[in-house]
Image (cartoon, rainbow, N blue to C red; front, side, top):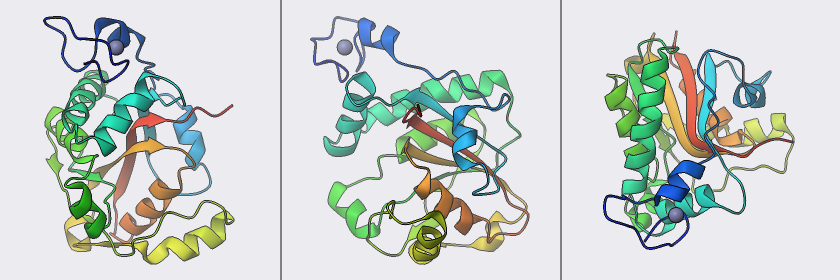
Length: 216
Ligand SMILES: [Zn+2]
């Protein structure tokens, strides 16, 4: 079955049918030109550059893919997306040599329930293509609450400040890191994770995700 449209797969097709594969809405944002993902973070956090692999729309292939990845134990979707996006990033060469690829973490309890962090396979593939080290537990989520999105930015930041801690801030000093998540919507999660990572002196943060909700 195709994870994008539920059609039966033909021989030689893997996870996605040829139609869905050709219709995947690639953003084609690289780490060179200014793009809509950068603009989400302007004035909020000090990051070097951001991009996303796909556009996330409510109905469609990407939504189905992420749903299967997150809730249906289909971790290989993360591998597929990471392999594809990693190749694109590596080919364009618009990124500095990355030391660590770091996933946005789940709370340990939630991860135990799900059995995996849905961002991990994606991150591992990116690390492979970028000759970087995948650093799974660099960030640790300490409170099992949803990221607040209703409050104003300042209030939200203060409230979420202690949601994440660093496993070892010394290890991240003066390092170039790529922070990865599944879907960027308001950017609130990336913002608070980046703030936490910035506790490491001289850190340089790039951001990417499987998908971004397009802004009007
Ligand atoms: Zn399909």
